[in-house]
Amino acid sequence: MQHDMQNGEEDHLNDTDHSSRAPQKYAGKKKLRLYEYLHEALNDPDMTNCIQWVDEASGIFQFVSKYKERLAENWGKRKGNRKIMTYQKMARALRNYGRTGEIVKVRRKLTYQFNELVLQRLSPATVLGKEAICCQYVQPGMEYWSSHQCWELNKYANHNNVYHFSHQHS
Image 1 (cartoon, rainbow, N blue to C red):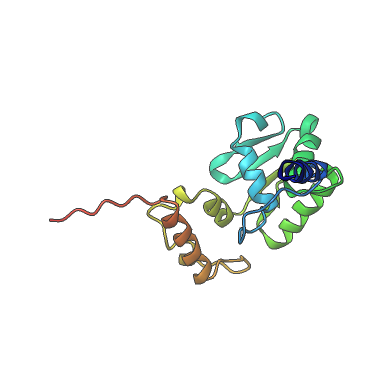
Image 2: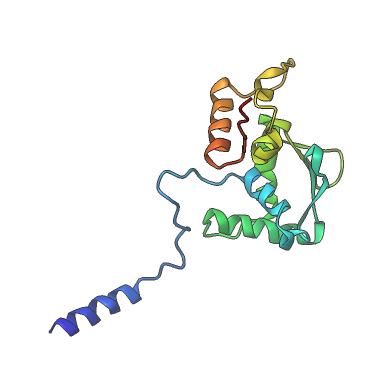
């Protein structure tokens, strides 16, 4: 009897199709944003046929025309979309980033640039020694991080051992 019940439970579990569900997220973890995914893809050697750095230090990147749809499809899968993501739909999201200044279009085909502060947040190791940079220089018309956002960046960096300070005693 116990054996039959276990088999019934196993059959019930096997009948459930989980493949069409969105990927499970960790409790409390925020959703991956497009600009984070693009930065991740730019640093993935397997994605160089889809997206490439033009000038990494300046945050300028370019989609490879032939395979930009593949990158968009992968983004849709990562988001857990049921329908296939197209480059056209992904480009709409990129235009929205242009309004917020997180990513801006560069006057070159399929070429964009990360905002300097976004680039620093995506590459926290580059912030070493410049903890106050997000609050230090103010230019009119630019969007800046609040002191709370700067604090969150430093908290993230410290939590993830990005900063390795060695304390020397005289």
